[in-house]
Image (cartoon, rainbow, N blue to C red; front, side, top):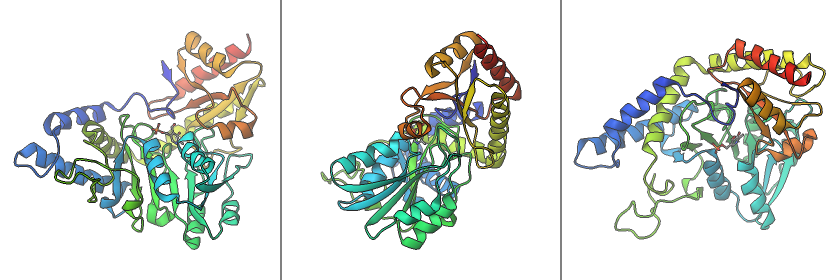
Length: 380
Ligand SMILES: Cc1ncc(COP(=O)(O)O)c(C=O)c1O
């Protein structure tokens, strides 16, 4: 199989990440706590160090503001529901994944918030000035997708962060696609919360992600809780981390996430990014030479990751993917990629497009094979 669905989840995982994850779990996979027996205390320390590692990864100096969550969907839901108070005006974009749109639209439909969504230009970028123009006295939150999971464009976060900072509005970043591929420095970029997931560009396992909050962000704003952790207390606990992390943590996931972050740092985020972008560029150039292919991507791929979406004239995207798989062993994803507003604006609703997404293990030869496959399908 030529796996080109890395924007859904990276696959395979680096063997050294899987090995370290299992090795740590076999030593420390017990309920963490300040207990008398060694592994419980060691696991507790591991979790503390994990928070420091994750904070540092995002440029934060506040490990006590790192929260584990199931994935970015859970993290985004918690922060959006935590920050959006009745009467809040929220600004987001039409590039968003349903992980952002669903909680926002639910709050809007219930009359809790008012919502504006900024459009993207023909190259797939948000104009920061449009965000600035929408900020008003009741704006409480800006939520932004860092890297579009349909278009692969890297949004101008620094500029949007500066505007949010000047207006005292927290910027929440959906880093599901970007974490591990694009550097994120929360203080330098004026980001108040980063929601991330472990299983995409971070090359870790599924079922683990989290939220990193800025120094000024109040933990009480986060709508999570762990009943029972504070044994004599039958109410929701108030102390960190139990006030924000429900139930027993996903230890195997956390061990995998930490191993994966070390792996990504060792390989170099810039190197990993450069590699997937050069593969995307080769695919884009090849596809652009085929008349029957309609590409949905920026003119130049300077602020871009390894995602290329396209359609083949007269071919349903679902059928296109079935042919790629059955006749050529190529795994790509068709549909709306949980980003329906992007496809509305591209004019590709309701069937969407075919998305090829590169990861750490793809090669130039695979790009050549994909181009040959598309040429063959186009000529049928
Ligand atoms: C931009 C974006 N946000 C959020 C998500 C949700 O990620 P997860 O399923 O890991 O919560 C995705 C997944 O594809 C995504 O691409």
